[in-house]
Image (cartoon, rainbow over all chains, first blue to last red; front, side, top):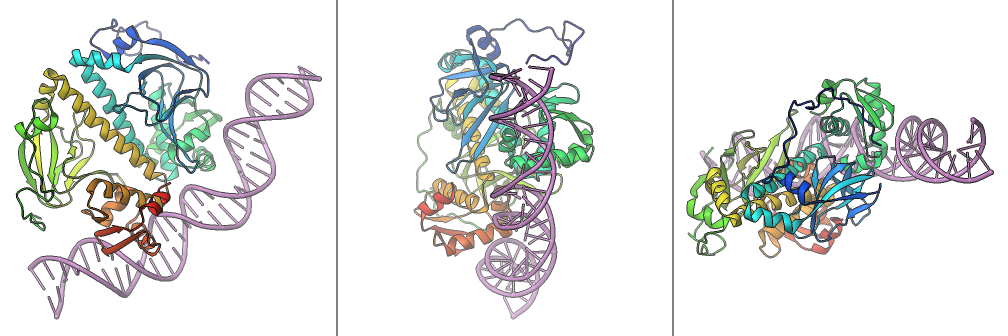
Length: 226
Length: 226
DNA sequence: CGACACTTTGACGCACTTCAAAGGGGGTGG
DNA sequence: CCACCCCCTTTGAAGTGCGTCAAAGTGTCG
């Protein structure tokens, strides 16, 4: 579970920065300070669609997906959240999507009212809340750009996005199933599988196991991601 | 280039409303108070992709689209903005999409720095800025749900959305071309046209002219919009 | 009236879905 | 430790919805 594939030599981390002291006046700091740690098992629901959005969450370890079931049974995945990501932050009073743990997950939870009260007094916190929603907006806009492309482009774009976010050289350990990927990309599981095979045949990727993907030729993937 | 095709008869605009008294402590109020009126002709660019996002805009009359050209020439439309809508509000420093006037357009423009300065002092303004980004996020999420459906469902969903937003009984005067609709829905212009014809044959809508659409059977449209 | 831009309609091809069955791979019990 | 089972993934064959290419129809402005 806690497979460390990278091993940094320096205590400063790869950026050469020392972790900042938990700061007041930051959203992250408030979460660490005032938040409660919680765990969810694989496939557990963290919150449901249309439930009151009383808490917000930060992923500590594991992966979370948000999803929505359409009335014909199809499922759309909103986003995947990796360690460090904040999710569950809504402007309205209810969650627009449900959230589930893809792997075993540890999160920090904080009451929304507490954060909003903080934001009302500290405009730096308010700014960061806004910025978080803004980043979410940008992710969803990028997601739209994926959905209008061909299957090859969607899958290639997905792999590049995940590789950027997971950042472990060129080998990515995907936490989600083919079905999750399919529902994120608006494709069927068969099309995702076939596309991965064809990318492998084209020497753009390698598939040591179904969940592990080696990006062999990013340039080729990026060209597909037109 | 500067083709003026519309001409409003009344200074009050097509809604026949007088502007409400300008309130302080509201984003709308600040826009009215500190903003400058500007006009753009049909097809004029209001701002370009990757330009610095130094201003935000509120539509007074006309319709605006945001769009993005992919490197293979395809165009994706982000959103359509109708009178009363705010657009151009970014969290990052640059515009992620370009904005163009679909019809002749009047807007109120305000410097982003001015609004952010206001927000730093007045947390009610800050909250409203955040809420505006939040509504945008919700629109984009709904947009995603359209993009994973069949052509019929996308077109039906689009018509229902427009009817809700324009609110003129059951007859909608669409401000945008078939090409704009197609690029919003991720379809071709031919498919949009064929789908509208088939909805007309199914007695769900009527098409008195290509831009005017009568919703004859909303229930049928909503069922398609599964 | 004629030119031009937009929309509609038609015929055909292809990418993706659907339906079906055959692989793995990992965990549990014998 | 092997065997079996279950779930996930891959592969195959056939169907179809939408895209592409082409041309005709419609409305608007000069």
